[in-house]
Length: 216
Image (cartoon, rainbow, N blue to C red; front, side, top):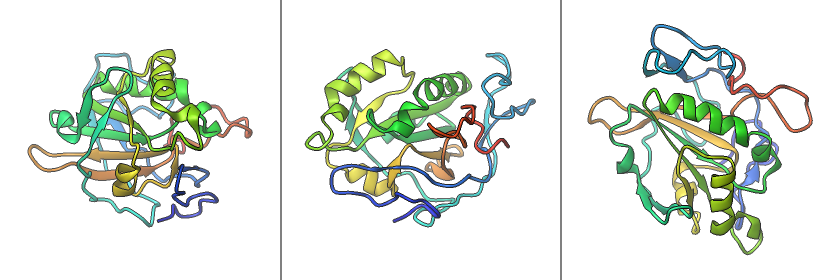
């Protein structure tokens, strides 16, 4: 499965390729009563409003809007806890991020991913990051180093290890970083509302990191 327009989008036997996909179309996170422009600096003060997910289009040919979040059970190296999809049952929305330690595109975003997700988690968003890379080819992506990264960057979300890559395959993840935003209504399953990138910033393009999802 490939992300449309991506230059490196094949799920490799040992690692997920670095994402270089084009701009996504719409930001899928919104606060009731006030719409942030996606910039961290312009986000409303904590405590205002609550999380709402609005319609978004996806550019992936592998998954479509309405795709149901697959079940998973994965360990969190930092705490040893096993996490499942059911742990997020009480959240109205869930952000699933496929990342890893070594990817330069992920390194470029780590601090801002932690900051933006922390802000929205206060509004009710559930969030989880997953690394599916093999320690045989990328030992820096192993569980011990994942725990160090989670602590160093103060990730507010669990950072889980998908040793078999089965969860990545179930989600259709093909690169890092790759973001899947799901919403749910009541007891209905989580359904995909957004699939794409964090913003247009890249390690070498001098575009500021804003989490703007193309500035919408």
